[in-house]
Length: 254
Image (cartoon, rainbow, N blue to C red; front, side, top):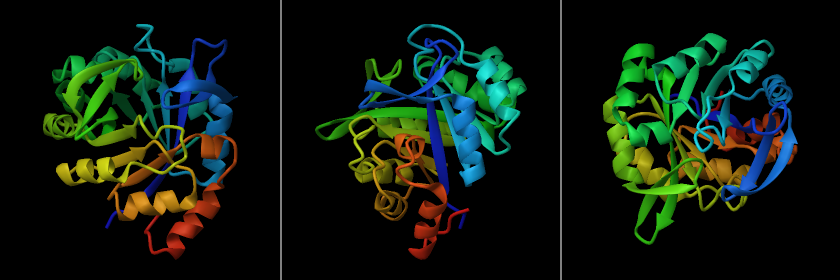
């Protein structure tokens, strides 16, 4: 069995001078957390398994993502880095890989042009292509959102997850919009449904508030990785302590 991964997310807004890491609640109520390369270096030293950079306003503002921020970070950090936000084509992705990214993440562009998932996978390998799914609960289904949660699509999240897996995505970054920033726990039902629907790894995101939530999403949600932001940014949970706790509870973590 593959080891479960702990992932730190750096939501970065380049609309702020120099670029700053931000964190919101349900994609709103934004607060600032620090400089992306400094936080990334801290997590690397603390033993995080992977880092995800998301330029949260790139697609909405129709601009390219943070090539220089990625390059600066990769000079300090030597673990897997995924970058997303504003990637619209092969050319955009190539710039990020050249800057040091190990994987790229797409959401808005994938829904608008599903063939892009296949093109990226064929060009860079499925292991380098992550499709992000921002899902909102609607009574008995989950709806996908794009443009950083600003626009809903009418697309069913579970059906879309199956589709992107078929198109060649190597991983899914699944965010519960209802749980994002609430610290009330991951959406276990949503995560389990997606995880059981696809054969590729699923990163659970949205709702982490305590160590027990990570245990739940691995055991009950069947996630392959669990992502958190503010818990790590503001040192509410220390990464070594989280890993120690999970190992004691029988979870195989890196």
